[in-house]
Image (tube, rainbow, N blue to C red):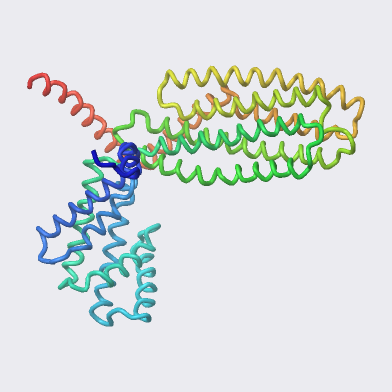
Length: 415
């Protein structure tokens, strides 16, 4: 048997991932649009049809229904303005500059909103690749064919759901926070930790805080893939769980940065004594270990898609939080005794405990449940006000999907 390249093996293993699915969908839609344009037009190489289909099919179902028309308008506007330039002046450096200027201005005039740059992009592509088209109407017709194929393709073969990649990024962020908390506990227990090493942990905490923005991008994509998608049973609840969960982790990242700063200040101000006495250091390391476990369990809770897994994660989170609260009281008692003996750095110790309290409050299960209920009510009302028509379309799509699923088993049994 011939050897199979590792890249192909990896691609086969990833066949169910959203990135692979989206790649296959885009390729199929663009090919179908090209075939349809060959049938319906006299253009020998109708490349605008697959180009437009490729642009349209890249978006989620929600974006297709709400912003697809604006995207089509932007492409058509770019096609028309490029047609005029192609007929009058052709392609040169100065005509290209004028083309971009007029395209962007036209995009604002036709109100395509966030797709204004696509007017210029489409115009440049058309000016470069469609010199063989005979008339402007051919070019517009190609664009419309590609747009219709892309829209129908997104409605018939639904775009992938991007929840799993977003959940993996959230879990990875939580793992980084857990590892940093564990390392901070180890540094607190070291008898002579250099200030530079603790300061490096503060920089790491700052990078964690900044990495939230990257996770937010994938979460936004996941939220759009859930909207109006009939394959998702509770899209609004899933979106709120992930969004509020990421908000909590963002708050914990800020708290973690402040804790790292407190430890750095303590290391800077110490003289010959260790960062903490041995009994306080051991208790503080235990506290950080419980906090690390709580952050990890919290991420598992918000990314669990199966109810039994979510229940198990919630139990683990409750155990970690209870242990962390007991450990916090133990650390507070030890610090109080030490502060009474040596009150020189009491404000930093108090600030450290205050940040621990804030993190415990952010991860609290009851507070999170109440926050979820409030957000669910608020977003349900907001969606009903903003998109009444799309809500009706989504409801109809779900009912049709349920009917089709109920018909298939009967058809198989009759066969």
